[in-house]
Image 1 (cartoon, rainbow, N blue to C red):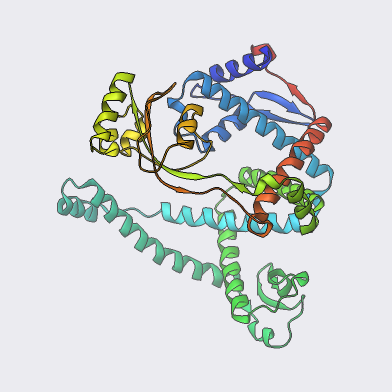
Image 2 (tube, rainbow, N blue to C red):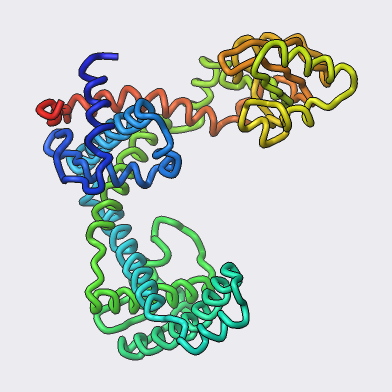
Length: 415
């Protein structure tokens, strides 16, 4: 790994662990940038966030560096989407408007729920009845709040609808409604047939479904307006969603160009027949011992009739294997250590292997069941072929975009 990359990862591991994160620019991307706050936000939202504090510094630094590069690529794609006019399309604007309405409505309902609390008298009664059962007390509180929230929500929506002076014209659905047919009106708000059934869809929409959607949108609309009146601000979330949506639209267009029809996928499949190969899958039992002597002794006990799985639950030094009593689940051929894979290739079902050494310890393995390898036909793996082709095209496309919006690292002064 280049020295600069190592220094970058080390700096990231050292500077972003404090309680407060400055809004310092880490890298400029074309006319945009990625800041420390953006990186920290992405790290906190990542699937590994809960395990991150327990990782060693090297792994933490690698994940931070990888996330920073992801954010930089995302920023470059966003700028490309803007340059190509994706944020000026009617589809983009309509989706953003719908998202804003839904988000504001959601935030207003959360605001309503926050206003509900368990009365002191009832709280004392619940504590007396439930003693020290904290789980039951929490459930009782939640049940009370849910009931009160349902009633408060229905009452507030009814009030807001009345204030909005809503009128519906569902009878127009029976008269060959056209795109500009108005189905509902409120103060400063109109819902037309085309808002619910896009003209290009060519579908005969069910009138009852349209009525339900109109009522849902009227409810969202009045809640969103109430949120605005309360001063609820969703601009940060809107900016994030706009960033995501523009990239999504950009890549959707690219995918259409890369894969205009099924013939493209079929041609790719014929050039890459191995994509249809599904390796053998095996249900594995495993015990990992701390020494060769212990592994050999445990193997003799298994050959004498004891269960590998019971012994794994007691002796295995592999945390997962010990917790699951040696049951490693279904594993794909080639997914383990080379030494283990070599042993599995010639191991009959339900027979314990010889002792196998790996960096993790001394292994005893057993195949409980297996699903043979197979070659799948085109129709069965069309989605897999599509993803493989997209991944191949995406690599080259990202390089092209990153060339247009080059990275300018701003952290060298900190290293």
